[in-house]
Length: 248
Image 1: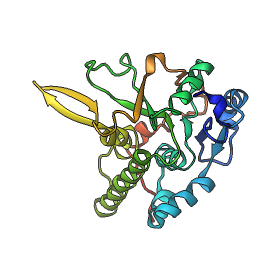
Image 2: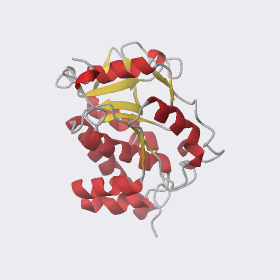
Image 3: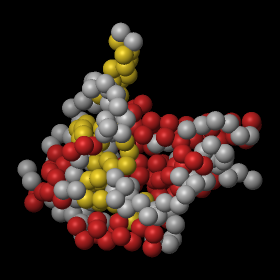
């Protein structure tokens, strides 16, 4: 089966999330992806909030109260992927291999429901047996149950953290663990220590449904479009001194 069996609306859906109405900071990124894929879209909160409301109305206020765009993006991409399927990419990603992206879409026409990227080992050195999936680029079929599970786990983590912020004030936290790739890894991977070394494998019930791309040879590359980033505004910097939620 090939991509010719599917229309853009059926499968080759490429999108991102941008939390501001001003999209000029990501114009270069949008031009690259929009020229390559006619289906390319940029979604915002006006698109995401109705999806959250349809699945869990009580979490809409939680989502609205998140202060960091990256954490909102973590949640948004999961609900958008569940609803529409396709390829989600962060706004700093660029295209390395157009045909390679189409090849990954073709993999979704078989038994695969989800394709994730294993983080480059030159960025995060680790044993060959250890996976660490990033969430900056994810392929998924519409209505993929694993994606919805990740979405609800992220909301549960954030809800718990918000309760502690209200109770205790400032406290140490890590966005990547609460809503980011840590959620993806916790849902997908079976982690255990053997001889004091971490071994991670895809859970047995998912292994035939989930494909893996090594970031080193992925058809896209991170940080090509990063001019929108401002000094001191990355989530890893802000989480050191700021609360995650904007509660009055």
